[in-house]
Image (cartoon, helix red, strand yellow):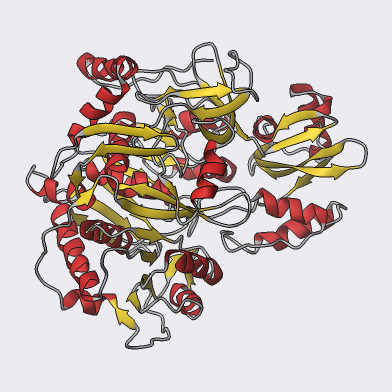
Length: 637
């Protein structure tokens, strides 16, 4: 079923967007050259692209500064007094930073970093909560032409130490703590533990956020506010080459060893600013809120660099969306008059579980456009998001991209392309996606295959920090010269993409390949199910069998024999071969703070193995609740 994607824009505005697709198809490099004119260049590039797979150089010899593109240029275009960042802390404290304020703070911190000896060849590590000092620190590094490495504030001391050793950082910027569900996350204590294992670290700059007592070790430890008070003036921003590294961001690896994804300055900024402007259709007075944590790529691209490069107003919220209750998210929308909301499917499904009364208690009529990111948005959640949050009036952009891609590669575009519940739309202008079979040949419409990117794009990763061999092997070896995303997908007759999940997220039952994404989508289609996670478990006869973990909807009619009903439901929708061997009703699924379901923990639980690394788990208490649920239902764990 196709859903219209209405948007109240002049016909000429829509025509320009439609023309972008044909222009990019006619000459991809010329399209990106024109797109790059929206960025301020200190020195123009001499060539759009040099490409010898897997190595790309975009906007060759071009010079620019990412921070001046996100801040300084807005001081002279009438936006210096416009809100750049609206911050709300979990306890309820607020701050508003205009572009003028942001310029002052970023310039001061850049001077502080220089005084601490930061220079060429350094990578500054940032281990902070979702507070304004995090984007300030990112932009201060960019102002100096020094790469940053943001470490998610939910990571453990050991995870931080791993990243400090990999980047050889001399400087860490952290906080005394951060607020999460009414508790203080001990960031400074974690930093102390990590730095004890990392002798390269010489200085730890500490932001005072919670005010709790922390160990302080001068002269290594320095208070952020004291350093900033003692700094005045502004230096000329560094001139960076388009291919200079902007940041290194570590993401999970299939081997368990984190990968430091390298993104460079020019192409990344062109890609993120273009996609933010093109997809979200922001207007001058709009309030935009991407709920992602800056510790992940969505936060980098669509909380910081994309919105600020476009002169937008972006909301930054520190805490959990259900603290102190599930209405917090909607009260923030009401309070600031949010017009564009970009969030994760897991949070959407959690809102479904919490019930519509929380929505009804807030005035959210300011919303004009809704977005989704992180994993496939199943059709039932799409419909709920559209009907309950968007009041049936807001178009939905269900986006697909990765840490490695840097920017969104596929999405519906309001007023231009159709939005189909469950689909991520068509590739954006300038993006050449292809679905291939094992031999590298394109598959016909409706058939599942491997999702690849056949042509380079500006914000593509430039490598894995310190591991060129792994970069080539992981992304470029399966189909030579073609980027392999690791995702499975299919395309319908209208050209819309359907992501079927990671190709390693496949369960083989008696030789039949079953997609976990398809199984989970079928489960949440049942009216009693709010969320579901599916894994494969060992089976003596079938090789593997399906095990499903299910969260009930709070307000649904929940039958007492729900596991049996769900088994019949799956058999009816997909087939008996897909019928779960085990269905476990649980109060909550284990998730990271970014909303990703940690299926590995469920696997270990049913197989009787230790949980393994739980440093990214949002709520460690969920493990005990899962074990209790299994025991109550007579399932060995």
